[in-house]
Length: 288
Image (cartoon, rainbow, N blue to C red; front, side, top):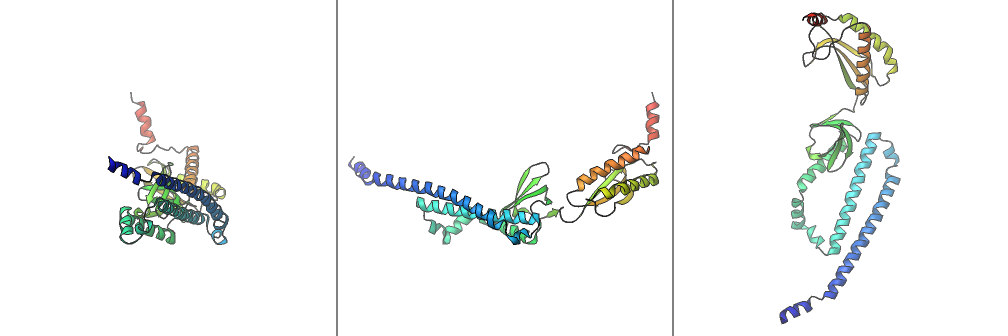
């Protein structure tokens, strides 16, 4: 019993309470100072860095990429300092954790090898300008628009709205659809007995009328003529090169114009994967 009493007296509860209260107050003040400092840092970043003449001289996508990247680096630095000061206030031996075997063990535990790979690969992505924010890309099996580029991950917004987070070390092959002109390939299903010369003439007439009203188009459409598509459908193919990002719009516009013009001239058009002739259809409809 006397041992317990001596132990209880040795705890110095008043000193412990004062120490805990002091640390709690210090942590609260630190968090308040951090929030204020973060707001000031964001204001200074937007005020000076985002409006830097050198940065304004870059393209829109490149400017968004650099702003997002340096903003992320600033956030990482601020949060690192916050964690460092919290550990220092709590009383953990921060210096020993950041030195020698301590930092090596911590780095292995946090998967620093993968992080360094992300960092190195992200560095080369930026230096080589493989893609910028706003570019339409295909990375592996993910296709979409680049939303953000960080030192650890790249964010790609899929065309269905899904946001994909890809570690930079996993970006091995990038197909950038926003560099240079893009081909919009139009394939109009036709019958084997269709008058190809007449189809060619109608398409030329549509092109002559619509090209002056389509500034997104680059050059003159290439009329390739009859082909067999990958699914075996007999088609009439036209290739149109357009400014990047405009391929879907131009494809829909000219596919509709071609079909309307052909139907207006009484040229029968099958649905995809239809191989029978119009005469065969009429004969089958007459059968009982």
